[in-house]
Length: 279
Figure (cartoon, rainbow, N blue to C red):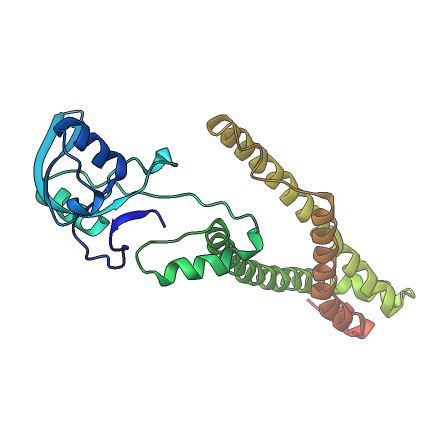
C-alpha cells in the first residue's frame, strides 16, 4: 500500500533503487517539471557511495535504475532510498568498501510465539534469524554437556576413592590381625570388631571431606575475588551452599561405610587362634 509506482520487491536478485515520493517532489521543484512517480520507473540514475574511515574518505560512482517509488508522506522513516542487499554487497566488494551487516531487533508482544515467528522468518532465506531463546538453548546444551563430562569424571574419582579406602582399611586390618585376635580372645564380638574399622573408615572419610571443603572454599573465594575485580558486573562464580555440603557429606560417609564394610566383615569372622598366629 506504500508503493506509488513500480512492482513489489519479490526477488533477492533484483537490481535498482527504491526512492521516496519526496524525491519526486524535490526533483520537480528543482527542475520546474511536473513528472509523476511512474515517469521515473526504469530511468537510469547516477549515485555515489561514500565511506568515512580512519584512513580517509572512500568514494565510488555507481549507476543503476529506479525500480520503485514509495509514499513517505505519513512516515518520515520512509524518506530514504533503498538498494537490494545482494546488489549493494556486490558494489561494496567491487569498490573495496567495508561490508556493514544491517540488523533489526524485534520485540514480540507475545514472547510465547518466538519460535513460531523465527521459523517463518527463516523460511524467507534472506535473513539470518537469531532469538535470545535459541542462543540460551545453545548455552544450556553446552552446559549440560560439560555437566555430563564432570559427572563421568566425578564417578571415576568416586570409584577410585572407594577402592582406595577399601584397600587402606584392608591393609590396616591385616597389619593388626594379632590385636584383633587378642580382642576376640578377651570377648569382643564380631560386630564389635567390625564396628571399630567401619568407624575408622568413616573418620578418614569425614576428615578428607572437611579438608576438601576447606581447600575448595579457599580456591573458590580467590576465584570470586579475581573475577569480581576484572568483571565488576559478575559478583560470584563459585558458591558452596549448605544443601550441597550436606549431600556431599552424607554421600561420602555412605561411600566410606560401603568401602570398609566388606573387609571389616571378612576380618571379623577370623578365628582368634588364626589371628594370633598371623605374622
